[in-house]
Length: 115
Ligand code: SF4
Ligand code: SF4
Image (cartoon, rainbow, N blue to C red; front, top):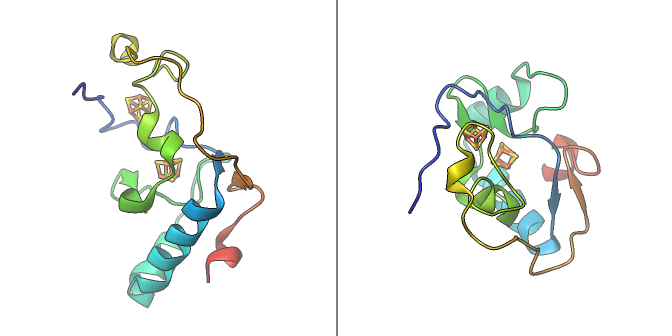
């Protein structure tokens, strides 16, 4: 599988993303299971305006990687989700959501919805 040169981007492409009911449930479970200190550290990080509320600036990676929404998994690998740093990785057919989203993560759902 193609890999993307994400190290160093520091959440450049991680902004508000559509999220489904099932994805929200999984994220809630993950956030609740985090050690309180880690969770507070992640929540309290300073982020650039528009960066996803779950991006871990300190570790330069998704803070909820194992439960990230499907669109985040698909990004960079599909023809309609091109990463400008590696456009040649976008070889798969156009991505579309398997389930209808219930809102936008970071806009409709913020940290207060996951605690
Ligand atoms: S997908 Fe592309 S823009 Fe996003 S973090 Fe990875 S290399 Fe950077
Ligand atoms: S959930 Fe993770 S991968 Fe998706 S936009 Fe937020 S930080 Fe990025």
